[in-house]
Length: 180
Image (cartoon, rainbow, N blue to C red; front, side):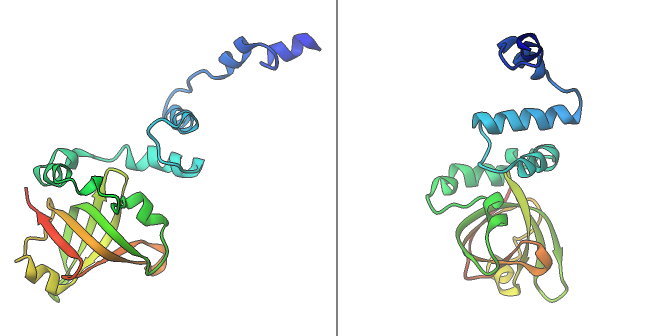
C-alpha cells in the first residue's frame, strides 16, 4: 500500500513533480495560466474560466497598440496610476447603469452611425468593450474620435444591452482625446 502511494505522488515529492509536467500545445498555455494564477504571479484575481478565457483571447490578440504614441501619452500622463482608474476587465464585471470614475482606452475601431455619433471598440491590456459616442461628444473634440486614438473618460455609465458591456460616451464624461 505504501508503494502505491509513492507511485501516485501521495508520499513522494518526486511523484508530484512527475504529475506536474508541461502539457504541449494550447492546453499547456492554460496549464501555465492556472499555475500563474495559483502562484499569484501577474494575473488579476479571477476564476479558472476567466483565466483560460484571458489566455486564449486577450493575451493572444494583437497588443501592438501599447506601442502607439497615443497610448504611451496616456500612460506617461499618469491616468492609470490614479486611484479611481478602472480597467476594462473590471468594467465587464460591473452591473447595468453602474458609473465608473475613470476609464482609459484605445479606440481599436470606429464606425459612424449616420446620425453624427459613432460605435467604437475600446481596448486596454486587460480586455475590450464596445462604446457609443454621442454626436455632441464628437463635435466638442472636433471629429478627433477615430481608430488609433486614446480616450480618457470620467464618470462614465455602463450600459448592458443583451448581456454585452457598452460604455455611453458623452461630451460630459469625455475628458481628453490623445492622438497618434
